[in-house]
Picture 1 (tube, rainbow, N blue to C red):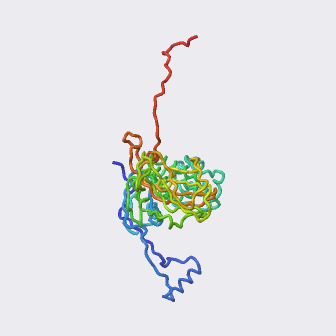
Picture 2 (cartoon, rainbow, N blue to C red):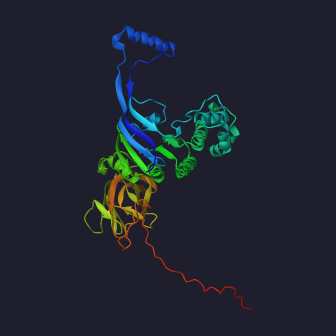
Picture 3 (spheres, rainbow, N blue to C red):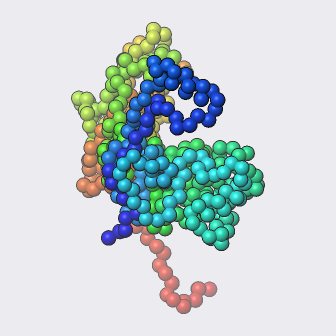
Length: 425
């Protein structure tokens, strides 16, 4: 049986909103406190907020667990409790192993110390000997990319430099448990990819990683398990794909009536009023099957001006935001030089190549090369299993979202010369 790295039982955390502070750091705060004491009607109201409520979970050693959910769900609070930054109101937390965490830019750094001194300090806090820290020092500095400024006080670092060094320290000082919050979103794309690769490397070494992110693609690629928090409670936990689907299906789509949608961009010369999907020459369908021909269509109206040189695009994305299909009238060679003031435009797709699942559709339309209407998440598309390959088989959901028509053949190899044979003169 795999050893447990973290065990949480009935964990709750309460915050008081609007209460009196334990101390007043400035003269103005002390004066305001005195005035409130003299005038009861001026006293600030107090309220309580439960950031976490009866949270229980177990994390096995070597697991990579993603925590997802809407803003304010309690994800960061949970990680702060596990990192011993804040104390729980009630409940218990048991942790086996050394914990390194990156919850905010510069967590655990002293601004007056140099980068070199902060690396030594963080290693000492983690209980490492100086020789251990020194053996990893060069690797940390190389990963962070701040070697030129390693002897500069970190208070002079930019937020990006701060973050790169903080993550390098957290990931390289051999923690048994690595805790990383959404702070990685501060870095640029190259740095984010570098961090994801490092967390994968940490996980392959048998260490435990806890990761909070709103990037569902990163969660799915990195984590083997996930927890969904809503309102301070865990409402779903288990396999990553299952938890992500539960979260995304709980997020309401905007109004399906495109006439009423106001969250759109463009001049309005061409305006989408309805989107539908169906089998060719068939009735509108709520779900399509992969491998079957499908038809996407959009109804439109104009603002009274001429519709010339119209381009229409359908962008089909997975529910975590990855583009899966890009359908464009212009790129396919279809030019709508002139259109009536209202009508319907169709796009036929041969053998729908999407794997089973749910997708969202964005609509993008131009007139005379100028954006006329852009509606994001205009519709929800459901794709059901079908016999795309004619074999009754489909790849698992973890093996990509697009199916490709393919043909396999054996290429004859030239006959091999017998061993030891001499070339012919």
